[in-house]
Structure formats: structure tokens, C-alpha cells
Image 1: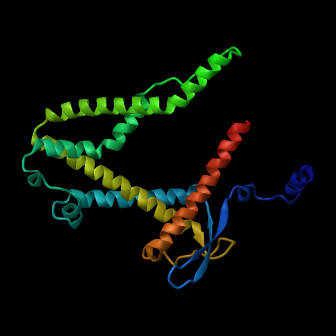
Image 2: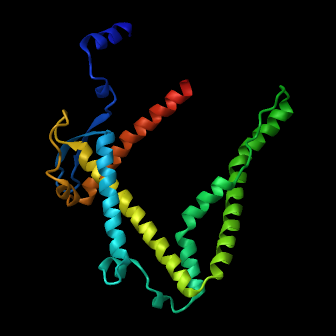
Amino acid sequence: MAEQLREVEKNDVDIAELFKWNKEVEIEDAVSGLKVKFYMRLLGDADLGKARVFAYRKSAELRRKLKDPNSDERVSLLVELEDFSDNKEVIINSILILRMQDLYQDAIRSVNLPEPKEPSKEDLEKWEEYQKEVDEYPQRYKEAVTKEAEKIREEDMKELSLKSIDELYKTYESEVIGKLCQEEMNDNFYNMTIYLSTFRDKNFKVSAFKNFENYDNAHRNLKAKLKEEYRKLELGIETLKKLQEATD
């Protein structure tokens, strides 16, 4: 091992190259049986920055369209106020459904259920009790989160019920636009990431696609497979981090 380290120093290897995670990916077309090889690598900070800028621009573009009452995007993705027929209950429930994921995240952050503590003495009965508490902990935690989530939901519903139909609609509109733009940002960030990380050659010199439009117009199965493979690369990095933390 020492000899290998000395060899690295002697040859003056570019340290940045040691941290470029990559893989060869072979994808087969289910219909034709044609197999194509791609080479993928995790993006560096500069390319990740490009992907984020692209995603933010796409999100902003969608937001402008959703706020335009005459846009196709608004007509297809937003329910207009008159379609709620002045029914406060319907619009309140729509808002609560849109907030459900965030509501549960708030509940998880709020719940503080201490984990069982190991007995301080070698007492068999106490260890049996401890194991029983450990086995029951996941269900107790789930129940605590569900209870807290319902509490937050009820408080949210009371607050919403005090608003006028017009105020409720503005809240609904904001929630929908926020969710759709977040999805738009996430999708475009990953799409640009895959485009920038995929090559035809193992030296990562020739992009697999002529341009982003070429990638964007590729078959959805191909894009889904490439995304799956890139996420495996990301998972490898996360696994390595956890292993390092465990051994530190």
C-alpha cells in the first residue's frame, strides 16, 4: 500500500481524477434487441451549477405561464375559482391535500420520542424489557407522527376556515403553482444532469447526445434507464460516506 502511495506521488497524478466516480452502462432496446453502451460519471460542481441554473430557469418559465390566465398550462393544470362553485369545504380539502407531504414532514420534525435505553446492568429481565421496547418503537413512533400530523391538519383547517373564498383560492393557487414548479425544477435538474454526465466514450470526451434537445426528445424508456443508472452512482457515494462515518 505504501508503495502504491509513493507511486502516486512520483507520477504526480491529478488528485481531482481520483474522485471522479464513473461507470459503463449497457442499455438494450426491448423491441429491437439492440444494445448500446454509454459511459456515465458523477458531475463536478461546475456542471451541477449549470444543471441548477437550467432548472431554475425552467421553473421560472412555468411559473410565468401558470400565472397567465390565457396560457395552456394554466388551463390544464389549475382549477379556476368559478369551478369550485363557492364551496369552501372543497377548496379547503384541496389545499390540505396539496400540503399533505409538508404536513407530515412538520409532524416528523415535531415528534420527539426518545429511543429505548440499554440497561446499565446485566439483568436478563431488564434486557428482555429493553428488547420489547425496541421491537415496539417503530410502531409507537409511527403512531406519534400520525397523531401529530392530524393535530397540525386540524389546526390548519381551522385557520383556513376563517378565510374568504377569494383568500382560499389565492392560497390554493399558490400551493399548486409551488408544487408544479418544484416538480418542474427537479425534473429539469435531473434531465440536464443526465445529459451532461453521459458519454459515448470511456474517456468522457464525446457527449452521448448532440445537444440537450436531442436528449430531451429521446425515448422515455432510455431516459428512465439512464436516470436509474446515475442514481446508482449517487447511491455509491452516499454508501461510501456512511462507511467512512462508521469507521471514523
